[in-house]
Length: 502
Image (cartoon, rainbow, N blue to C red; front, side, top):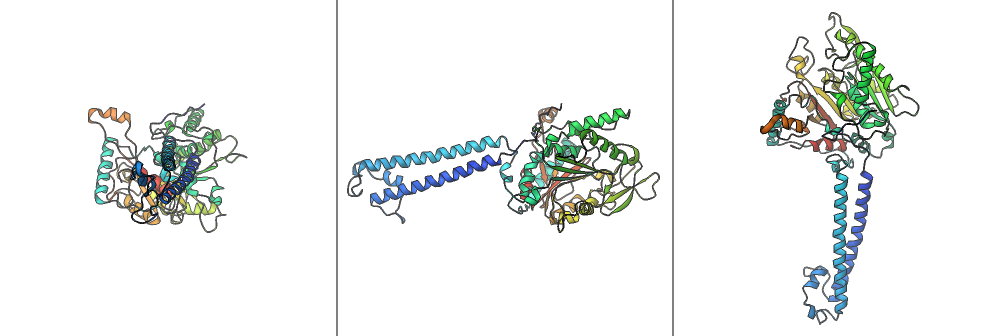
């Protein structure tokens, strides 16, 4: 039995409490309208009986009018013969109503506070999706301060963006649900995740755990399956728990809920692909799409690129499971194997032919293509131009083309062809996407290690879009970028709220 681990960032959550919050807001609004109406009525009675004008610059609220009249004169000519007891009674009613209004406001604030304890951070900004989210532009001063903190963070913890906390994964199913709104054509279909560069499958497992934890496909169960396969083969796979210790991620505290979720795992390495299909059979003994099942995990032994066809891949792809050297090499390279490649747009059109004018809605387009991420994004132009991907995440790794004997990829000074991060994010911005550098929060372990000098707080995300990052980040190792379409304000506002420096 798998026991969920506690996270210092509480990155998992259960069901939504949106309904209860909306119910109390409606109740408060109706009650407030009734109370205000009653107060207006009392005010009218008082003004009428006191013989004062009901409008104009000399008019006063009922309780102010009463307080301005000496009690011994309230039954005289100015009061128009109004009985003193009647006036006192009306004043008491006004005071009682004002007190009830104050109590009602206090109750609502208390309810909000209690619900805030079970909602993800900045939940108020993702309650509803009201169309395109406003694009934010940073001032030069804000951009400079953010860049200074980000680059210093690379010195404090070199892999802070290589192995980020991904705090935005908290209650990600709520973000997707609200983004889809009331459209039955979208809600009737499963969450759709494209895991490009699947490797050992930990991103796929992480999304299954976030979206449909009851299926019991998660990083913990996956590493158990991988290690069982290795034992059967009398071997041990390198970094079998993932390069960022992915198998140790805290699980969703909700262990029962099942939601329809469809994940496509693309892995060009035949050896890793075979391992993944075996692991899937252990985790899904009833098959990929069993009757009544909610999880669908599709495996594809192919690469993604900006063209369709066949490409030569490093010989490491044939035998080594999860080998980082499995990448495209020049045709004619000794020992190279031929693996099919396809664009994201072509794959979606072929796999979902029932979608006529638009491509299917992709909830997350995840890309980790060993430096070829810009090419995969180019092959997704139709999907992104139509804003049919709610969120996008990809890896930025300039070191692949700058260091080592097997230099490859498009990022960095040796890129072929070279692509800069800001060039790619500017293109995504033009298509309607806000992008951020993902990061690791400062935790107690890091503070303790730093000792007396301490480590200042850092945001969960650094904003790139809108001149918020004006120079290429000084990455040590590699970094991860996450983006959201401004057409889905739920997701776009959620990411922006985590970029606290802007």
